[in-house]
Structures are given as C-alpha cells and as structure tokens.
Length: 456
Image 1 (spheres, one colour):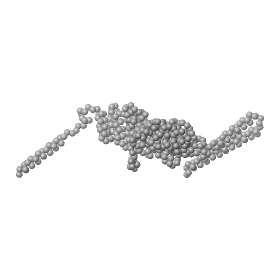
Image 2: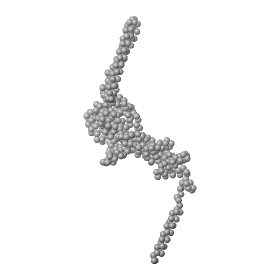
Image 3: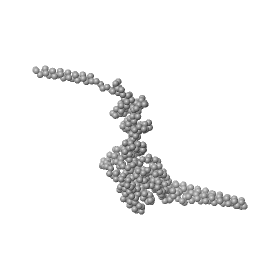
Image 4: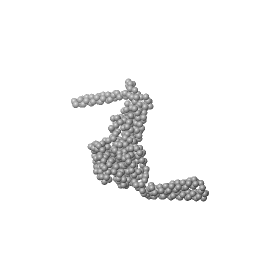
C-alpha cells in the first residue's frame, strides 16, 4: 500500500517535464535571414552574388544562374559583373553534359572577349580547352573535340606561356596529339595491311612530321621505309630508316633500320643527343601497367586511352592546316622522282622531333604523291604521247615558211602559189587529223585507267 503514492508522484513529475520540453520546442526562435535583415548593410549586388554562389555550391545550378543573370541585368556597373559571367560558365561546366558543355564554352569565350586583360582570362581559356578535352572520344571515333582541344591548348600556351596552368596545358596537349596521331595511325595501318601503299603513305607521312612525340612514330617510319622500298625507291626509303636511327635511337627497330641502311650502302647517321635524352626520360617515367581486364573494360569506357602519351618534350605548337593535313609527301630538301617516267616527283625532307613542317608541301591528290603507280604504264605521260603535238607544230611552221618564201620571190606564177597553198592546207589537215588521233588515244587510255580503278 505504501508503494502507490510514490508511483503516482513519479508519474506527475514526468508529465510536467514533458510539458516543459514541449513548451521550449514550441517557443524556439526562427533563424533570421541575414541577407534580408534590416540591420544588414551589405550591397544588394553582393547579396545576389553570395546567394548565387551558395546555390551553385549545393548543386542548385538553375537557381544560381538565375540570380547571377539578375545581377548582370540589374547592376551593369557592379564590381561583381565579371565574376558573375565567369560563375555562369563555371556552373555549366560543373553540371556537365553535352549541351551544358557547349554553353560553358560559349560563356568562357564571351568572358575572354569582354575581359581580355583580367587575370581570369587565362583560366577561361584553359577551361575552354578542358571542356573540349573532357568531351574527347576514342581514337577511332569522331575527332572533332580532339582537334578543338588541340587548337585551344595551343592558343593558351601561345598567349599565356608563363601562367601557372601552362605545364598542365602542355601535358594535356601531348595527350590530345597522342589521340589524334593514334587515329591516323590506325587508318594507315589498315591500308598498309591491305596493300594500298598510296593511301598508307598519305597518312603516315604527315603523321610522322606533325606528331614526332607519338608513341608509335618509329613504327610509322619503318612502315614508310618498307612502302618506298617495295616501290623500288630505296633512296627515299633510306631516309626514313635513317630517321629511326637518328631521332629514335632507343627504339627496338634501330638494329633493323641499320641493317637496311647497310644493305642499301647508305652511311648510318649518329643518334641525336637530344633524342637520346628524351627517350631515356620517357622510358624512366612510371606508367600504369595494363591489367588483364583492361581491354575488356575499355569497351565500356567512352574516353580515349592516353596512358602511352609522352610526358616529356615540346608538343607541336603549329595549328593544323588543310595543306599539312592532306599532304602525302614531306616538303623541303631534295626533289626526287617517285616512279619511272615524267611528271612524278616527290619532295623528301628530314624532320626532327618538335620541328615545324617546312613550307611548300604539295596538296593531296597531286601527281607527285603517287607511290603505288608506275607512270610508264600510262601512255598519256610518256614522251611518245606528246609526239603528235610536236609534228603538228613543226609541219605548220614549215608551211608558213614556204608561203613566206613564195611571196618574197614575186616572179612565181599563181599556179605555184596555189600549189603552195594546197600543200599547206594538206599539211594543216594532216596535223589536225594527227591531233584528233592523239586525243582519241589519250581518251582511250584514260578509259582503260578508269576501268582498272573502277572495274564496274
């Protein structure tokens, strides 16, 4: 009986405590928004900027961009105008996606146009290059973003060579050029295995000239040497074998290249000291090893493989042009014929790693690029094909001289004059007939050539 009053007292105390806690929670003060507080003396443009940056930080990109755009439209003279434009581009970049990346690139370029002298202009240029870099596809896919990234990184390094981001941009440029060169090499290797020497050489030659830091440049030079050797142009083939020995002295293909040079009777060049230093640094650079699951898992990865990209040496800083992209032969140096016959000339030069392409490169499709054809089989290019034209000119000159001599004598009869005129007209008709025959022969030879190229 004595326990009941004690239990009742404890129940009353617990009820009172719960009521007190409920009252405390109910009367808790709300947080005050400092941005709208009357005691806040911060400028309104600063408030908009801070609120927008907080929203972007928490992933509210649309809300943040709306606040920044309000700042730009409402306060055109604000000191936060440049920061707001850059923050809008950054928000698109952080959000990701193809459409947002396009908006980010446009925003960064607008910032560079309106504020070219601000320190943030270098950052904006770097972000334009990185946006294209992140969208870069594999080597055997569309290389639009890869080419755009190469151009933007080159622009950054030319405009801001002393910027703290310059080393990072230089390495990214090596990665991009590795991907571009790999894409060209795969196409050339396909034509090389297929036996199409012309198509293979047309891609390997500009590749070795434009991307000397490419990890397979020595293999590309070896393929070029083999192509010209099979085309019976050992003088040109020896040039590519010599480049392997001189510019890639630590390559595993150097012993074979030296053997080819000895076979051709060409002096073996000395290795370049800078090339030895560069290849030694590349070999000593630690790289991730390729695991057993790398190739299968690479099928699910959309980005390119840049593990073999060079990490030393100066990348190519010259922007790609149509002539350099489509050229099938090296330019400069010595001129030499690519095949037997007339009109088939090729230009060959030695280019060291990091050296710019010389001027005067012939465009693709010109007669000087034919590696696989023999000009002697085409009757239109042989000296005999031009014989009718020479006969025509010589006969007409003879008739003219005869008519002039007859008029100069003056005592000749009209019969002799008519006879001379008749001979000249016969000669002209014969020459016209000869020219027609030559045109028919040329057209027939062209038709035969087209039938060889296009059997159907």
